[in-house]
Length: 482
Image (cartoon, rainbow, N blue to C red; front, side):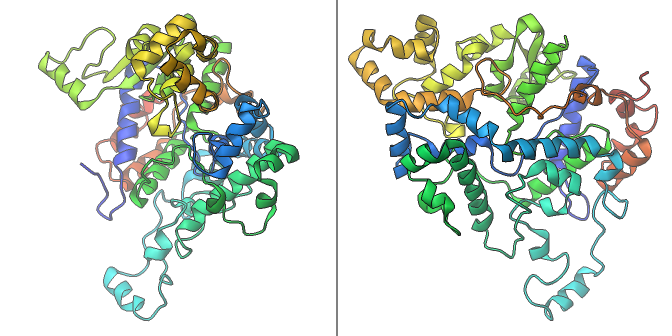
């Protein structure tokens, strides 16, 4: 069931995430909380995927040739992309903006949480619309929808976290919808060209294209990474950005960095927390994050239970089983043994596993004929993707041929699948996580006079009273702690 205010503001995502966080916090009782998000702009992986060797265009063929000749190494390319000055500047600027943001900065300039309603009634607006050019009515459809997903309506501090400087603000809806995607592809192409350097860029045929004014990247190549995913509607992004702003208002700064995915921020946060001796619980159902699970350092995942799993809990009386979900704790706890049970490989081999099987959801290629069971068997026998390729001569002719044909593709996927912070992953830019970030992530409560009115504006009537000083939501988010 979709939730919305009486005026039509969608709230399903915001309400669902807050309730999920509450359920986890009540049992885990963390001292610090980080909530991470993907940026709306391109990532270093989308730039690298312009050279996906499994593709059909000229860039894919050239990349496969250079890889076979030993001139293109995917891990080195990832490191080069992350070392480009523009990436480092964008990441550092976002970290600075996040550190400078105060809870009140996530409010509208008027001091309200939601934008004020348009001054005209719907009937008056209808009459006025007939007298104005298309899209000229303030607050009308053309003004409200944005190809960039409503970023232009965010507070400046939150915009700075979302986009690289080279991309600039999102195009308004009055522009042709493909323009935003084309602009993102152009920025990704520019980053890739700079990271490759003149010699490799020329060998791939990129140098001239990237330097041409007004080039249309789709004519050359478009990022393949996650390309098959359906786009979300405007309601989702309105809800999504309201969630980010509400978290900021609750003194839980939304963690977003240009060029980096949420998974990468999680990996770097886990690495930093482990270095400081903290145990970590990763609240996610994303299997990519299984590579971060580490029993020795107290890192486990909390995977939200499916409706079917909760129905089974109810059928059994609601108590659940050890490590499994219950009505009071609707999550499954995943340690290393549960990762092995789910995938057939330990966390350290999750990326190698994906390199063999591929990943349709991320549009990452694998080895033809290798499914989950075969991948687990090959890795158990040979230890890693490199070991599997080294042992190709001892395998059946069909398997050997498949591995040889997918050499470039599997190594490409291995580099793409490694989450920053995990063993063997590319090196992250130096200023992604400021030294004092972990302290700033400590749960210390929030200002009820800011959060309560925002929840009322979102018509979360059952949650708003819990935001009062001394009430449940305020305490769960650290209120009253010394």
